Amino acid sequence: MRNLKGNSRVPPFSREGVSLFLATGAFVGYLRPFPGTLGALQGILIYWLTMKFSLFYKLIILLFITFIGIYTSKIASELIQKKDPDEVIIDEISGAYLASLGKETFLEILFVFIIFRVIDITKPYPLKNIERAPTGLGIMLDDLVAGLITNLIVSLIIFGWSGLK
Image 1 (cartoon, rainbow, N blue to C red):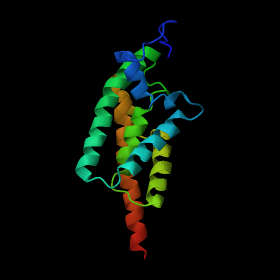
Image 2 (image 1 turned 90 degrees about the horizontal axis):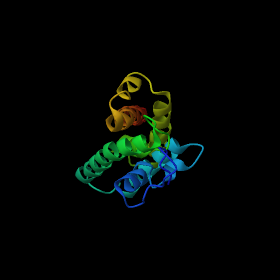
Image 3 (image 1 turned 30 degrees about the vertical axis):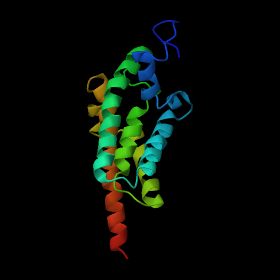
Image 4 (image 1 turned 90 degrees about the vertical axis):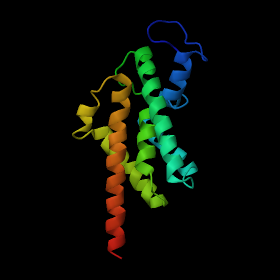
C-alpha cells in the first residue's frame, strides 16, 4: 500500500492501513475499471448473506458499516489526497446495503443494483449538494441517500407490478 503523500509504505496494521483496507472494501476499490460497481456488488452480497436476519440486525449491520465508513473514508481520502477517491468504496457498500433492505427476490435485487448504480453515477439533485459535506460524512452521505432513493423506487416498482396482477 502506498501512502500517496510520499513513497513511504503504510504499515498494514496501523490505523491508516486498517482504514485503507476497510474503506476500499478489502482493497477491491483498487480494481479497475469500475470500483464503485464492485463496491455496490459487495454491499448487495453482504445483504444477500444477511437476508434472513431480522430487520433489527440488518439495521445494526448498516449502522456499523456506515460509522466505520465515515471514520475510515476520511482517513483514506487524506492518505490518497482526494476528497472522494474512486478507491474508497465503503460508501457504495453501505448505500447498496440500504437500497437492498426489505428486498427478497433476485428480480428486486437486480433492480436495486441497476437503479442504485444509475443514481450513484449520475448524482441527481440533491446528491451533488450532499456530497459537499465534510470528508468522511460527505463521502458516505450521498451514497446512503442514493440507497434510500433506490429502495423507495424499487419498492414502488414492485408494488405497482404486484398491483397489475
